[in-house]
Figure 1: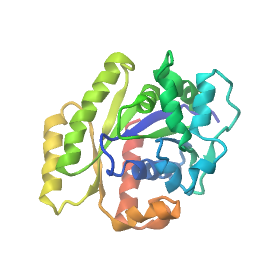
Figure 2: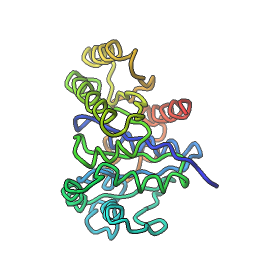
Figure 3: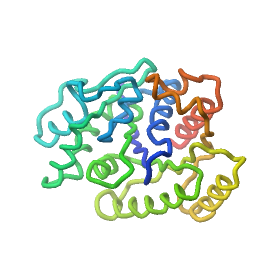
Figure 4: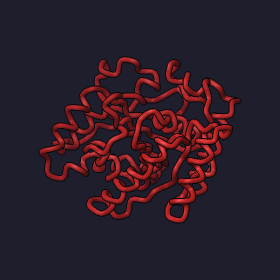
Length: 263
């Protein structure tokens, strides 16, 4: 069966906002709805790889660095190269510290922004969704992810400091559109770790939606704060395995519905 993947970058301007957890949980939620999903760990810290059950990613024989080297040297990819399967029905490409060397190597390359895109385009026929997790910065690896994507999901906590980061990220995306990828779309802003009992959360959500709601979409789904959700990384599984009947699992199911409705 041939697919035609939507490529979605999960992005944040600052760390600690649940970006990697959201990438994993959204991917598993889409897989539960019958979609074929590939996750790509485009983070030199390998946060996604570790959370998916590989606590020592440097021992892996193939990773995103392997793919990037082949793409840079125009070497053909082997079928399924560097792709691992997870017990919850998703595929993923892991990362490790070798990716930091790639980041340095890209600086001197012609066409350095499109190295990842050349690989991602070869994978589109095999998946319905390709989700890319990035560092909270706009280095060359993140630029490669945005250049390969159809859309970017902006992930932020519902607090004042994280909200300010959204403004910075919107400026960065505007620059990417201007210089590299004019058709890049913003899929929406996703609020995570939300505690609507706090004044800060309510005011942050209201302020951002008021300031930008006429220009960019905001997901109706808000991911609630949860101790159980923070525990999932220790067990190498998503929230659907760790706390399937909890509020966070229900929220990611709703987020997946919104993503599919927007197709």
